[in-house]
Image 1 (cartoon, rainbow, N blue to C red):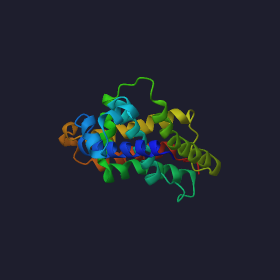
Image 2 (image 1 turned 120 degrees about the horizontal axis):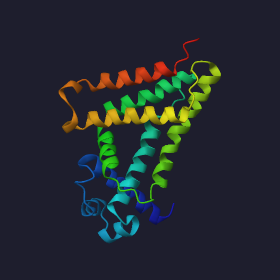
Image 3 (image 1 turned 60 degrees about the vertical axis):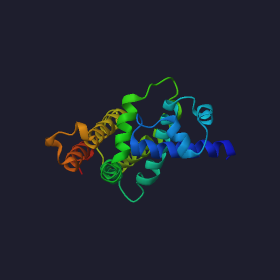
Image 4 (image 1 turned 90 degrees about the vertical axis):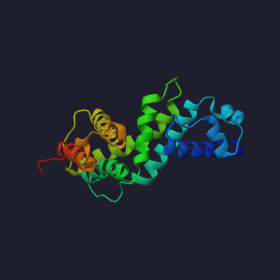
Length: 200
């Protein structure tokens, strides 16, 4: 790794920590440059805009979340791996709510200007893990056939992400949402019920 790449990675990590703590809107380029110990001109040279920096930070976080939570190897069956996959959304909700708050703000404020490929590439391992678990589940008979498994993956993960993001945003949580854990568990149960091969 070059010195320049190491510096970019370090600045991205510093920015990610600030975004998680304070929110994207509240963090300025000056805040990041001071926390990272580099000049503002250096930040603009490496990232061009704060939005580009937020996109890089989101990619870094997605990689870290995948490495920390999405090891499905402990489950033996395809269904077991899919249960673990969806269960991780609950674990992250309970252990890392700031991540969902960051993603909520990131999704709401990011101006996409054709610079999303690198970020989208960080999401591919999640889908690959999912598709591998689904194929295993079809092979071992634990998972029902889904007509369009990619669409099912996108729909269910977006639904879970949306619920978790909403429940971590204090200003959007209603009194009826006082038991967010059970809401997330219920949605996961519904998804798993659809996936489970009931003929075995």
